[in-house]
Length: 130
Image (cartoon, rainbow, N blue to C red; front, side, top):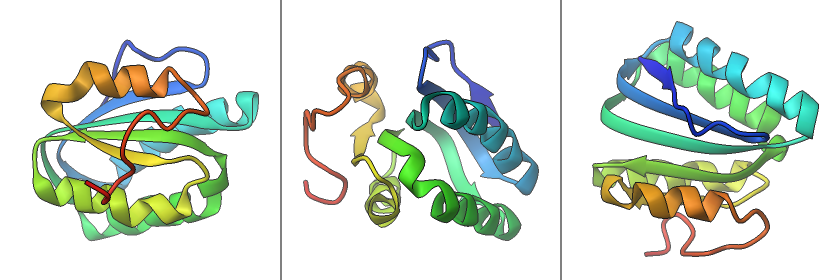
């Protein structure tokens, strides 16, 4: 399941995901990101994972293709979660994004939002470099 969070402003899109993402969930996320990419040229993404179990195979492929096609249109991405494997996912997607991808523990939610509010600055450690 995917939920839009109230922190969205200008080129920042904030979502919370939980459970197992389907193709329909990924399409919902794409519909949130694409208009911002068109309007601003890029998007900063706050991706919060709570009780998140990953993707169904079709959702994983759809998400991966979207990231490959639009990777240069991402600014910084904060992946905020509660499990170590989510940090590994952040490290895996970092090379296909124009901006930096950084993993934050769920307890660091406010720090993640502050980091995203400072575009162009790497206020911390990139994914996989802890």
